[in-house]
Image 1 (spheres, one colour):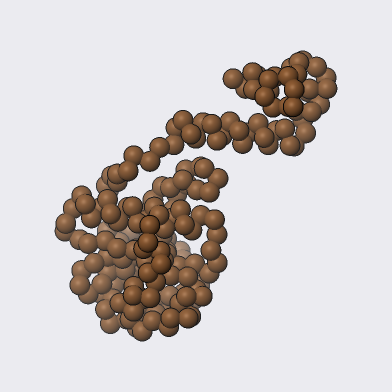
Image 2: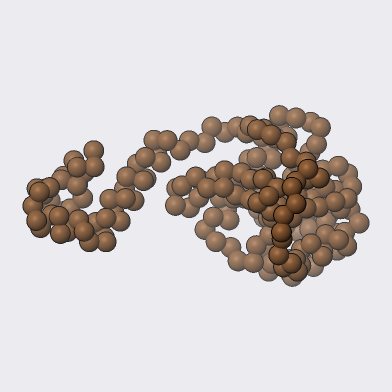
Length: 193
């Protein structure tokens, strides 16, 4: 398939694969990049499929997380959570916790998404929190994925209600929430599909 693509499609006209001119052109960055991107897109179109459902592969108990070294980064958001009377407990989601979701990123590749915080509210709900300083191309895809995950998990079990919130730094400073309920009420635009 690769040979046929190079011979008949890659350039503006059909070429001979063994021609020194073709081989020289193939060593250039632009044709190489186009070749890789075209095949990556075609392979992903054939193999990456959203089945529209979630699967619980394992459960996570934070108290069973093995100890690990964490950098003291002075989390502004953690300070906010400390002061919320409607927050029962929370955890920063480090790689050692192993809570991740797979999603299709802006390049069309399957990536892992590690939300920033897990927050348990006094009413028993668990809220997955994504915080960002700046929005990048993957943020809407991550928000879409966490929305779908919450819908799927809530549809599969009724023991715990899961929700999510995307709180960007600019909005956090603008709204100045005083409680977690304020935060949920302020950051609503991401909830719209």
